[in-house]
Amino acid sequence: AQKVTQAQTEISVVEKEDVTLDCVYETRDTTYYLFWYKQPPSGELVFLIRRNSFDEQNEISGRYSWNFQKSTSSFNFTITASQVVDSAVYFCALSVSNFGNEKLTFGTGTRLTIIP
Amino acid sequence: ETGVTQSPTHLIKTRGQQVTLRCSSQSGHNTVSWYQQALGQGPQFIFQYYREEENGRGNFPPRFSGLQFPNYSSELNVNALELDDSALYLCASSPAGGREKLFFGSGTQLSVL
Image (cartoon, rainbow over all chains, first blue to last red; front, side, top):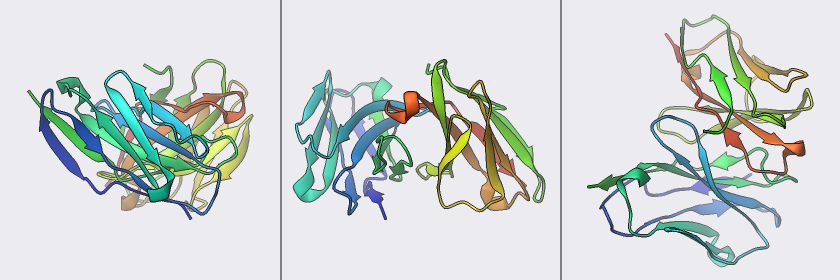
């Protein structure tokens, strides 16, 4: 069975500070996909990133960066120079399906509040 | 905005009733997934439809059922509603057999009294 743990329930930081959201996953499969989604108050889940288990390169996209470490089963997400618009609930998710976007197992989410 | 639309946005039902939720997938997307998100929790996979056939199911009882139509829109039906069915129901679509990322709608908030 798959499991995703987001130990940080809520985080508050002052605008322009950096913040890291932690994600630890469990799976016995050797091929899997990891995701981060953002859920603003409107409710829809906004896709941020997908990585497969064979690609451990860290990725940077603007103010966002992701650190994937198979040795510790972690896929952490860092926002640099946070902005008020970053306030949302962030979910980490795992899929072991063939296509990598079926049967996502989500963590319980981290509510991020950016204080102006 | 993803192009995935769900209706209704909010719904109130009483225990024992039946409910149908609807989802229009983004143009060109032939795969639709449904997720249940209880308050303060992450979404949980209910099932997925690909080309009108169920293509995987999560740990939900048979009273949760679905349909996908030729235009790839989808319905989620829940019979014999229970109080614990109160949740945000999210629909997600993806193109070409599901190899791409999921695009989520804004969900239907169901309250069971």
